[in-house]
Amino acid sequence: MEEPVGHLPKPQSLRLVLAVLLVVYVFNFLDRQIVNILAEPIRRDLGLSDTQIGLMTGIAFAAFYTCLGIPIARYADHPSTSRVGLIAGALVIWSGMTALCGQAQTFVQLLLARIGVGVGEAGCSPAAHSLIADLASPEKRASAMAIYALGIPIGTLLGMLIGGLLADSYGWRMAFVVVGLPGILLAGAVLLLIRDPRRAKALRAGAAAQPPRTLSNREALAEIFGSRAYVLLVAAGSAAAFLSYGKATWTTIFFQRTHGLTAGETGFWFGIWGGIAAIIGTYAGGWLADRFGQVNRRHVMTAPAVGFALAVPLSIAAYFMTDWRWALALLMAPTMLNSLYYGPCFSSAQGLVKPEARAMASAVLLFSQNLIGLGLGPLFFGMLSDWIKPMAGDESVRWVLYGAALIGFVPAFFFWRTSLRLNEELDRKGG
Image (cartoon, rainbow, N blue to C red):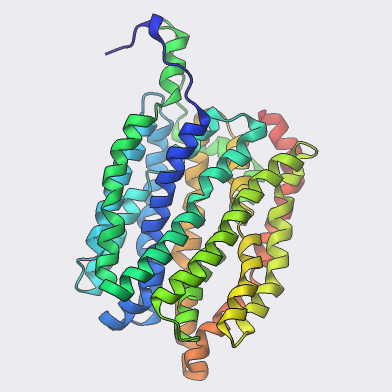
């Protein structure tokens, strides 16, 4: 039933929307990343190779997440679509499939359940980014995106901490069930607390107004890839995700296999301190982008470019340490520096396209990040570990992480190249 024009809904509070979406994204990454801390117990229980761990933690999730992300984003961009309902439905699916991971008895069953998690999570971020971009002004958009992105380190921290403690006490199967089921209840809260601002705008425009035109697939893609800055941003974000997801999986295994910590000990120490560092870096990245981007738009990308470059020697030094305490302490700085990019990256993507293509812009960026980053990062490093294991033994993971650290110069270069085009293209789009 249409609401009377005399009783139009009030504008939604950005703070409330960000708070609810942040909680949703915490569950998103908790369910996505808990498999990292559980990978070593799963490997021992099911007798898996490092390559199979890479498949389970990466490509099984990423393939379906990325393939479904673009058509779901096109649906989210349609003016009649309830982005809030889409997010809530996606939350029910990925939470239920996370719980099912705990019932898997074979590698294939676990792989299929992880695919189901990817199917559900494909409906979350494109719609959420589009909602945030509609509500936040351009000069505050990077900070708003960074607050939403805090779900990544907080969810990862909780996944490691809760997953590790549950794995040590009750086994890895129970860990999946405990973190999965509460998300189904959260979906109801999402529907109760958030309204889609597009509906309010349509009501304020009046019943006689023409509905906003939906871009065709060809027009949306032309809008996105017509931006050279966006193309460079995709390259930068994909390289950053390749490192972030690859190192997240194999650093947790590094502490267990090389330094002899249990899953619970790794989840507690690396989860908490690494999570704190990532939270600081994620928030600081958005704040720095808004603060210095007002002086010169190109400085939106300065912190990510410098951060990835500075993290290279610090990461190598951390992996070189024979005492896990020194390794953990030294990893705090590169973890923070490698977390500076999310707010600047996704806020710029939203500003480089028309509002009608914003969910699509996020989906294409997420497609590339997750296919290359989440899909190939853990898998590539796992295959590399298996390849050098006959020569390096249990030290194979340490040597793989040395190479991963050096790749950090690649995203640093692309973020710098993106920065050179931001003034011209953001001004042209009014973003």
